[in-house]
Amino acid sequence: MCVVSPGERGTPEATGAESNTLSSLLPGGRLPRGAVVSTGGDLPLLIALAAEAAGDGGAWAAVGLPQLGGLAAADAGLDLAYGLAVPEPGRRWPEVLATVCEAAPVVLLGPVGQVALRTSRRIAARLRRSGTMLLTWQDWPEAQLRLRVTEARWEGLGDGYGLLAGRRTRLVVAGRGAATQLRHAEAWLPGSDGSVRLIAGPAATAGGDVVPLRPVTAG
Image 1 (cartoon, one colour):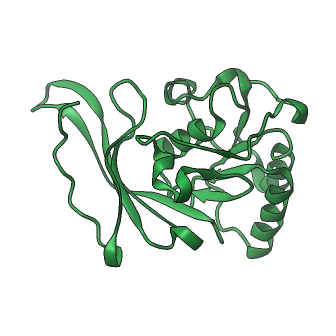
Image 2 (cartoon, one colour):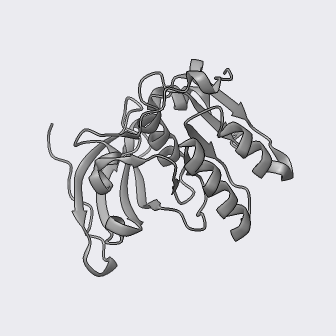
């Protein structure tokens, strides 16, 4: 992985999405720049969102994620040639994160423990100035969007035989403003080829309930 200078960032205002991508779950079908999006402790979801946010050949960085594998990142669509990794930032992770946010428009942050509100607000101000999108492994104070996997199961295995065909998940999205109403969908996260696609959804969720998983239809 390599460090990308601020002049090479190539940051668009926001990333759009096709109808079968995770971004289609979000208000306006876009991942917000200069904001925080939390992923509820699900690493495949974190990587998939980063791949959508970075786009083709976009710069990105990972802080505090020693478990992030290059193969999984590449399969999800992240270009390893434009990545920067700081696996062990230590207790001074806020300073490390602030520096990284100046070098990459998309940043993944691993588990860092409890985050003080003052620290969260200082980071939020840095994100707004730089236009960087911060994707956090853990829940985050005042995150603009919160995505989480409420159910997941691997498919493809029989009674002790067969190959894993993919990880089928149920996703829920909540947030501020237009995202206050819960939305849900079903997705392969990842599918058999490592990519991510929606199976069913998105749909609004009334009263916080989530509908049962539906059978996968052909095609």
